[in-house]
Length: 147
Image (cartoon, rainbow, N blue to C red; front, side):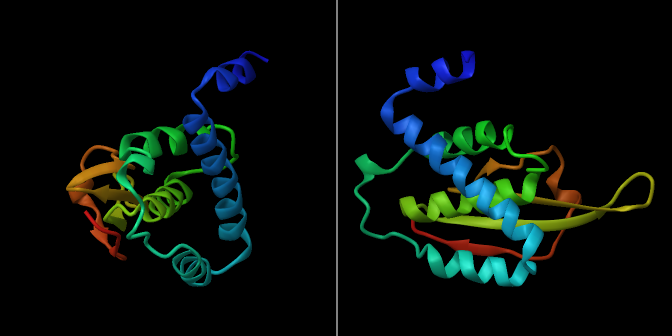
């Protein structure tokens, strides 16, 4: 109940962004479970072309997109870095922001393969900053949007 009150006390723009982030995270998480990654990635790219005519005053700030995705991800089971990065990229594309999705792999201290996904926009990491990202070998850089 306390979280519902907090949600209702948010400004309408934040409530809308948080709601969209939650729905998209659930759909992307389900898509990752049911579909091959390339199919999901292709569908996401086609379904959300980069907006180039969105007035700046109507765009959520990049930091608010990260806030909404991070907060909403706490309510979705197994919502790790990949669904968060995909949804962040989707929302940034809709807002017309230039962005780059990175997916990389590295060997852990135990020798096991580890993967991580993060999104950059304007030269800054928007979501997925987990410390030393330089240790990851990039598999898939994807760019979209405008500055």
